Amino acid sequence: EVQLLESGGGLVQPGGSLRLSCAASRFTFSNYAMTWVRQAPGKGLEWVSGMGGSGGSTYYADSVKGRFTISRDNSKNTLYLQMNSLRAEDTAVYYCAKLRIAAVGPYDAFDIWGQGTLVTVSS
Amino acid sequence: DIQMTQSPSSLSASVGDRVTITCQASQDISNYLNWYQQKPGKAPKLLIYDASNLETGVPSRFSGSGSGTDFTFTISSLQPEDIGTYYCQQYDNLPITFGQGTRLEIK
Image (cartoon, rainbow over the protein chains, first blue to last red):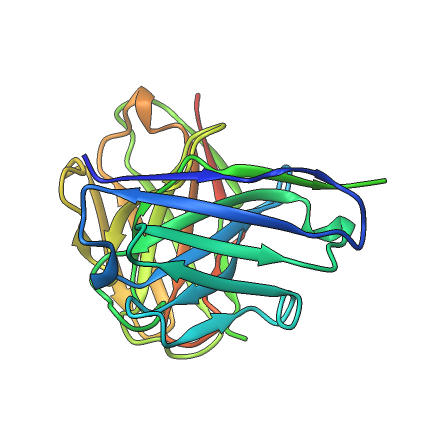
C-alpha cells in the first residue's frame, strides 16, 4: 500500500526552528511532485508548499515564504519542510501529500496523504 | 488569490437523502477543482478530481460536476459513514486554495 509517514513535529518556542520529514513508500517517489498542507486546530486546510519530483522547482504560500524551505532526498524517498522563525499562527497539523499525476508543480489533486504531525508554537 | 466559497457551511441530513454541496470560485478555474472528505482526527481523502472524475475506490454515490466558477458535489444516497467535513480545492493558480469546508452530520 502506498504510504506517507510524517515525523518531526513538537512544541517549539516562537522564533524557533523545526524540520519535518515525510517518508514515502511503495511508489516511485522521484516521479511525483509532493506538497505540504497544514490545518490549524479547528480550522480548514491551508496549502503551504510544493516541490517537483526532480527537486528543481519549489513553491510557497506567501504566509511562509522566506521562513520555510521545502526539499527532498529522492535516494531516501523523503520529503522535508524546514521551518524557521516560527510564529504562534504556524501552530497546526502538517500533512504531506503526493500529487496524483503531476511531476513538476503542485497543479493536481493530492491523492495520498500522511497521517499528519502536530507543530505547536508556544512559549 | 482565488477564493473558494462553499455552501452550506454545515448541513444535517438523513440516511438515504441526496446531499448537495456547492463551491464557487472567485474566477474561472476551468475544471481544476477537486473534492476531499475529512473525518475527525484523520487526513483528508481525495474523492473527486478534475471536477467530475471519481477517484479509484471511491463509492459511486459520490459525484461532482461543474466548470468555470460554479461546481457541485453530490452524495446520491447518504450513508452513516459519510459524516465528516468536505472541502473543495482549486489548483488552477498558486496559491492552491481550499474552500472553508462543509460539515456533514446525520440527522
